Image (cartoon, rainbow, N blue to C red; front, side, top):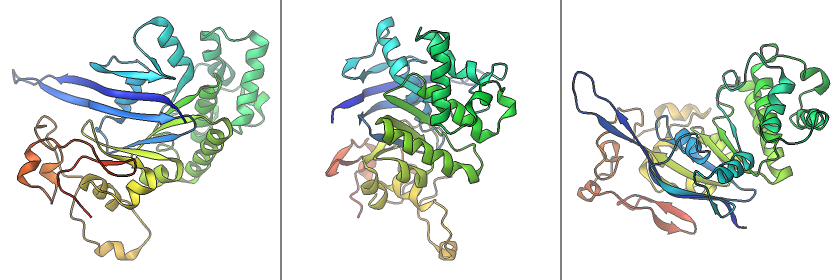
Length: 321
């Protein structure tokens, strides 16, 4: 399989202005990020809040401009050329975290889903309506003929997220960027929406960039995973290989923090506490060293991603079994 989406050395830094005349800080939201997704593959970007996951999605769609780096969609370098932007914005669609904020409350469901078709001048009015009905059937919102007449406030959170998914599917995209798509839904319907996405991904061979902090859903849905920490990928590889045999201390910490219905976990020792504060402006050397129990002098220099197994990479100076 060829790469349908490839990211090379992507960087985006923001300036955080200090108060009362203090010097401004540089926040390295994404710092030399490289990864790729093949056709029909689900690549997971995982990490805690503030690690740069959502920034990467915005950079791919060029809703914000990168400082440097390249984005290739179907082997074409996506720059600010209008034709290139149109190509990636038709071929890549976004599912946002919040189904309440990501759709216009004053528009009917039919108009929300048909809007991308109108923007890209696809079909006439009748053809667009038929496509809307078709994708509503695909996301199992029934009766579709009645749903198109409703407003968002008349639907539940799970139904709204299905509307967002239907809107993304309307253009028949090759890549969907899903930013925490089930995190704001009730636990009872998260599995339903995730299973629906899984079915559609397999049916249409769509590639997903699945952004999450939930490693349980990541393992169910993903094929490969990149673990992000303060704007850097610290571990990357096949999802089972990374989650079952983690080689970076931060990946171990994330897995250690997963809640499991096992009473023995109450007495389980946790060496790495990922909720400890970290000063994001101090980025010399390994970014995880002030929270890592395995820190050595060499950690004062920044480690590079090194291959440790087939397609499995880790950025750590200490070799952990």
